Length: 256
Ligand SMILES: CC(C)(COP(=O)(O)OP(=O)(O)OC[C@H]1O[C@@H](n2cnc3c(N)ncnc32)[C@H](O)[C@@H]1OP(=O)(O)O)[C@@H](O)C(=O)NCCC(=O)NCCS
Image (cartoon, rainbow, N blue to C red; front, side, top):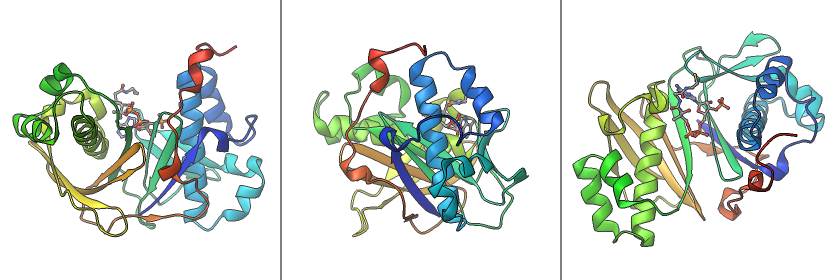
């Protein structure tokens, strides 16, 4: 597995790097936030897949990235089409506050639904949020990390939330599912490369092993159907550890 991060400043101007299908979906998004996030995830995905598949010559000319399409299944899960053909690589996409990450699975399998990735920031979460969306064991863990309003509370609640979303992406259901139907366990000691192990147990679908890391203000989690080594960082991305959360859409909520 490999991963790559990009930020809003990396997105090429104009639309020539998007395919006709991607542009048509973008056209339907009237809110700047949705449109910017859609473009950001597309750019992360195209860049990651181009580097992972050795198509780095396409990065020099944005229009050549149009052939690396990030499309969606009817339920929302992403898949890659390369020059009009389904690519034999699974991807998962996520963005949060001006940054996006693409996780690319091992090459050579047409299977999709093997991976899920999720990006969050360390931000406050309410007592009600924790009580409503976490299992009793997860709530107990969050309470041991700190009181409501503390950094420990915010860190642990967002990390567990992110791991749930990553696993629910593997399951291809997203937040249609009850978030308490999956329970997260964490290894708290990161390895020298920054990754620490996690696992997510789905009451109806088994256990999904994964990894998490904290990069500055950001928390990144992934889950997979099978155990894997942590993903390697692809060349050609931006450094999430120095990422500053941004909300550029606030001053211009509607697309003009
Ligand atoms: C999956 C989900 C939890 C992610 O929401 P989020 O945390 O706000 O957003 P993230 O940036 O982390 O992830 C968004 C990406 O998740 C992926 N995704 C969406 N639905 C997915 C699903 N069912 N399974 C796996 N991945 C999914 C997509 O790649 C999406 O980006 P894209 O639309 O640009 O391709 C949320 O989109 C969801 O619950 N979706 C299912 C229900 C729904 O509303 N579907 C509407 C589309 S049919």
